[in-house]
Amino acid sequence: MERLQNKRILLGVTGSIAAYKAGEVVRRLRDAGAEVRVVMTEGARAFVTPLTFQALSGNPVYQDLLDAEAEAGMGHIELSRWADAILIAPASADFMARLRQGRAADLLTAICLASNVPLALAPAMNVNMWEDAATQDNVKILQQRGMVMLGPDQGEQACGDVGSGRMLEPLTMVQQFAELFSSGSLTGKTVMITAGPTQEAIDPVRYLSNHSSGKMGFALAQAAAEAGARVILVAGPVQQNTPPHVERLDVVSAQDMYDAVMKDIDEVDIFIASAAVADYRPLQVANDKVKKQAKTLTLELERTPDILALVKQQNPSIFCVGFAAETNDLEHYAKGKLLNKGIEMVAANWVGAAAEETQGTFDSDTNALKVFWQGGEVELAVTTKSRIARELINLIVPQYESYQRDLVINKENVVPLK
Figure: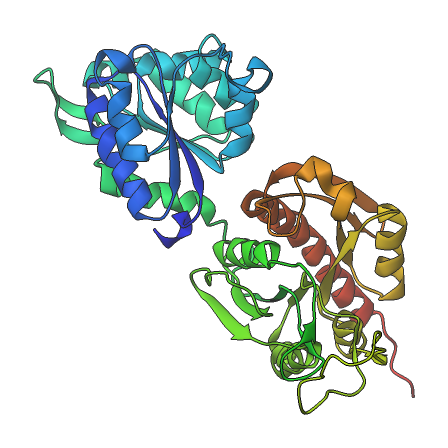
């Protein structure tokens, strides 16, 4: 269940006697490292009080579609943007019927309609209700729309009947739910990602650096691992926890990062350069602390290695993705990087005052990207960095596959010289 670490899970609780088990679902999700918010339908409140879920989740419980305290009174939009995935447990027969119809008369159905994140349902109902043709038709349609059914289980039910319709036990349910974050689209591939800033020494005490937190790069590492890739994360000096199943190499300077990248680059299929590498470093590093003497101090700087450009030059078959953080002319500079470095994709974002819409990108938990590749571009709207990382990986995969096909075609069309 490591895949749930740092995920934002919205748990919907509907009107079923199994609602009392939803408290254990909350606990299991939190034990797996997820942040949980709970939405209850009117029917659910007949079985369990909102206070129970508030105590277990550590967050307020959401109940009303029209909430005067929500931003612009649209709580369903806020919650749909907040969540990385939605789990409905228990999912009653009535709720699934309304969801199939596309109704939005309550908060939970409105959230489901407004959201584009993975959605799983854990059905809970009487065996005859589960086996009824209408319910089975609803299940079929919901699955065709991409929703995942977790269960139901078999056994004795609260009414005394025996058969299918019991809600899955919370531990089993959460284990299966965690698999929603595993696509397998990069299974067998090696992805190298650079993240964070670099520090360029002036003397033993001082250095030149930038505000990068590494959060975007670490989110990309987790998303690539969830997609089944072997992930090598080359990280500058940051305070971030290593995602599960990720190989982490810690570095300090741009030269350190270059050396670490080149050491393993021959094993790499996709290289994502999200690090904010210093462009310049002091030409001379003082052996002792530079003392405060004159009113001004002049530092002579030299260029650091252009890691992304050198990776592409020396390894043309590697699919390379660059990042461009800009304060102005974002599209112009991003497309320029795409062309000048000869890479396959660039993900660009605003920083500084221009990043107000995304609440700033340095050390924030949100971001927005504009992604460019040869012949295409797409905007990824403001959302959490973990979600936008998965969206970017989902963009990279088909472009990488197309790139690999072109490499094979070009190789087959090369006529050897006689």
